[in-house]
Image (cartoon, rainbow, N blue to C red):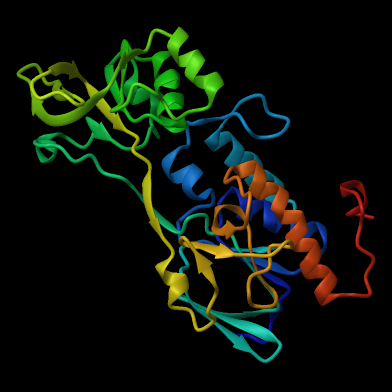
Length: 330
């Protein structure tokens, strides 16, 4: 451990954590970002890089990977320490600072911003007979390589925003796209549901996948049962299945920290300035919990200035806080 003390440590390198680093840099704060994955971008980069995001200000539509690339470019203009492949094992109060222990090192910081989203995450797996017999390139949970779907017969399983976005995205390059959901109603934004219904994506509802089989010609036969029936089934032969049932997440690493942070429904309780029950420990993005919270990226972006301004005011009360973003570099 060195004698160096950071002003701000951001735990989590997803889009909101990246913006927090940039904004801390705009305040000339000495900051570090600690990310457990091998690259920045968090859930968006790892699970939904091709998802079209419609709720980012100034962008009518932008792919997840493009948003992450823009945030990386923005973050690169600031002089902070970016630490990848590091998992925070413990956080302890140490005099007037915090001691952060990762799987690689120990550092000290005056304040912490928790931006870990929903914590560690993994795609929710498809549960159906015969899953284990299907090749990994035919049953996938992310659309990282969009070209692998070109001119294929594709089935997308799911009914949320991401499933709708992926079905529409693949509809432009695949020979045929089916969207299978266990309900007749979709959980996506109303506008995108209307776009979906006007597209050539074939909706298969309300059905649930019961089994998968390999066909003689190398395709996968999807055997699906109509909900609330005993004997109504449908078979679809496809080249690829893209499952989008969301993800399973947890923040068990945080629960092992010496610093005990108050939680509610697996998220971190915060006040009006996003501060937790521990002074100078904050949470932003999906990890922050308060009444009326809407867990979208745009909300997390908006929480960052509130948090960083509160931290800098606490750490350096004599400094004049800028009112507008145009004043930050003055």
